[in-house]
Length: 216
Image (cartoon, rainbow, N blue to C red; front, side):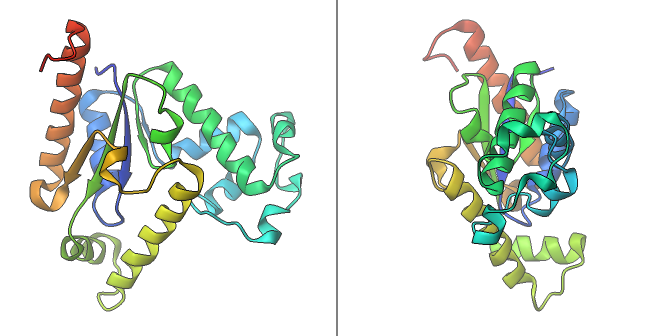
């Protein structure tokens, strides 16, 4: 078992979610992607359907921001009622990510987790990418996307993720300076990506054990 929390950002169609799930299985630690939303709903009282509808979306229009707390349930939601809904959702996710990270090692996909956990030393921030052709091939083969519309689908999904990240985090989505490791699944494949990240986790933990900044 690893002692490291791994956050995974990913380009759409890069296989990042699959890499993250296989990594969690390899390291025998919890995995959170959509699973995180159930935890957020439990912690905050915000309806899970609402969380899923606006998951990783930077929805800043007036009607969305001014929606009342009628979309939430339970006493835990009361602390979020005096702010716009998009902020309530982000802060609820923020709190849950911090809580989950405090419980032990895990893999968290997206949702600005690298930003949320930026002050913790045992976090490895990973970004998964691939070239456009490889990503188009993947979403056509695995997601059933229309080959004619696949490239546009990639651009739209990446733009949505970038907009969400750039709005809430103090950085730029996909910027190598935000991550400890950037992995190309087109070059390494999913299995190779998992092995590379797992090796990086192991090396970081050995370095931490030695307490030597020059080790490994």
